[in-house]
View 1: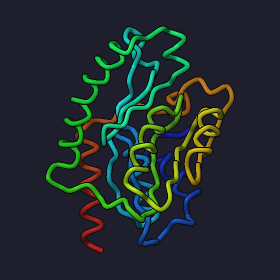
View 2: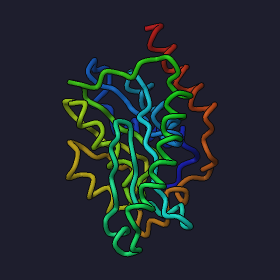
View 3: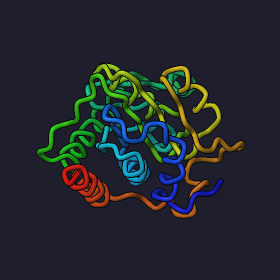
Length: 217
């Protein structure tokens, strides 16, 4: 399956989440930036509120696209221990990367949410959305952080994922929906015609649109 862009992928994904439509307990949380256009279409189709859950990948120095782990709101850090051991990464190196990404995490939270308070998660069904899963480390960090806020149910939903990441996450959440799990996987971007970077401005605009729609209901 080849998606035209993130918005179209979100429409496809929404079709697999119809059983969550028009429910007062459902909240859609996007992993920015790429997950926001996907989640916008999901939230609109389900008639559910949309917000962001900020997570930052911890890239291996010199090989930044290779994730050695991730951090998320609430001080949660998840490491890919296999990669850490294989590359012999020191705790000092990991801490240095984590400190840098923490600053970016805090910056993005301020840009995206501004003065708006984070949504109430406790007791809600939370649908976590991203544009895809490669190693799954970023999503695992989000799941770990969310659990501390006591949602009643956590659902992970993505348009495309590696078969391994989709299967592994299935044991950590209540439901996992991966619209496509191609093999060989070859990376998330391989399955989009347009995988251009989502800007902070686009994230802010989509969240503003979602809030305006919710207010008008």
